[in-house]
Structure formats: C-alpha cells, structure tokens
Length: 154
Image (cartoon, rainbow, N blue to C red; front, side, top):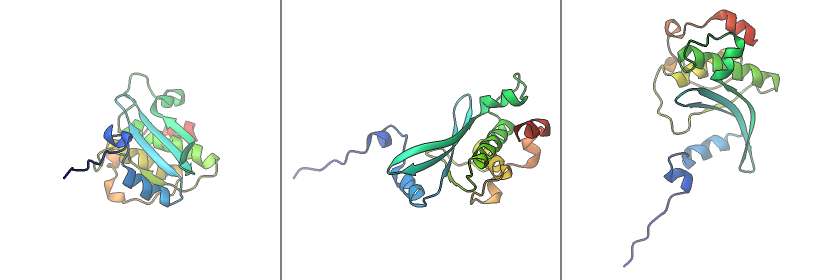
C-alpha cells in the first residue's frame, strides 16, 4: 500500500504564508494592518483583499521618518521608530477614509512589548480602530517618542 504525501503550497514551504490564519483574516472583510520587521526597517501597510487579490491602500516605512526630523544617527528599527511608523501609517489611512482595520502579523513571533506592538500602539494613537489587548503594548517609558516629530507627521 502506497503512502500519499501531501505537498504543501509553495509559500508555506518557504515559511512565508500561513494559509489558515490568512483565510480567517480575509473572512472578516475588513482592511488589514500589516506589520513587518526586517533587519533594517519596520514596514506597515493597510491592505484590502478582493477576489483573492491584495491591494495596498497605504504604507509607511521607518526610513520615511528621516523626512520628519528623525536623527540619522539613531536607529530606525527601535521601539520609538516602530511607534512613529505605525502612527504615520494611521495618518495616511485616515486621509483615505480608512477608520478601522485588523492586525496581520503573518508568521512573526508575537512578543509582549515588542516592536510589532509598538507599531500597533502608534496606529491606535493615530486614530485607527483596531481590536487588540492593551496589555501587550510596551511601557510608555520605553517608547520615548519625540512630540516634535509627531506634530510634523500630522
């Protein structure tokens, strides 16, 4: 008797997509706040999915913060930069009449008080309505956000 081998989808084999989690997010029919962390940047996007096609509505990258007065000698992937990147994405989304979204973490590991949740807190403070648990946010002491940059983003 031969054994049947189930071959996973290519993006699952490459550890890029969790299809079960994606299906649940897409069934909500709300825009998704996508937060990704690379080795150099924090990237946030608001995306909608129609007919299995994702369309990016707006995005913000932490390297955009330099335009708003972020010192070039500072890291653009720390907690403060993550917070401001989420805040910037929320301001851009509100200009395009997006008022609510759901969080899409992808395959990233969820760590309480991490950079992902700093970006989420920035998006919430920017005016987006995103369902989440407030206990996962980093402390205000750790964020150390410069209000001058925050005012320039508005």
